[in-house]
Image (cartoon, rainbow, N blue to C red):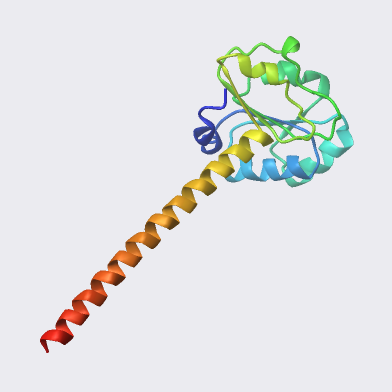
Length: 170
């Protein structure tokens, strides 16, 4: 399910979050999470040295081993995955959500098993979802521009008409 994506994006405050990955995209996600005051943030990476480097910028995060990710996910409200892995790193057969959870899959190829979205407790947002949202927002902005231009043209016409009436009377 992709419903609720707009609230998911803004509803980070005090949430427990797991970030999987330690590259540039994961770092950007951590900056966003920090800015919006997420609660406890866990970071896991296949390479502990990379996670350690990330922790230099984000001292408050807790680094967990890659093998602990499914266990920690049970406590989390949000899971952000941004690895360079060529395969799925969160598999449906190893994870059953116990509460509502939002997965944000920022990887190409995808990190999160799409079958997870079959569960009503899961809100899965991936790059395709983000692209759809962006496209819908763009269409909405274009429509608002058309409406604005129509209103401006109408107001301009009315102004011109009233000015020509004033000149005709004068």
